[in-house]
Length: 74
Image (cartoon, rainbow, N blue to C red; front, side, top):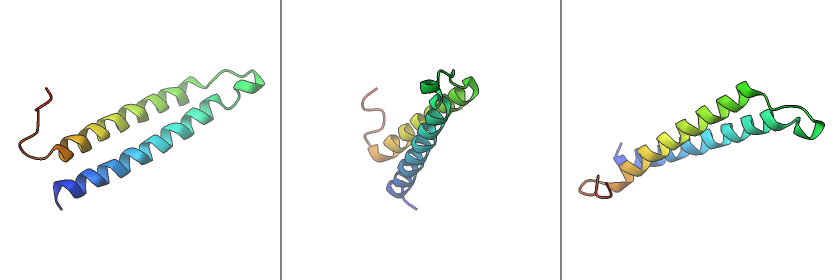
């Protein structure tokens, strides 16, 4: 498997993590219209999933850079 293929797989995983985070956010805030408070545990899980998504996106971007361009923007 080449780095481009792996980067594409990571991009797919990032999409899945984004979907999960959105589900958790909807779960946590679903009762707001009824005057309920958001569930702090579910909000914390959404933040954790979002951090994981960002890390996976960063890894995919690094792989997309290819050799010779790594670190060029740092």
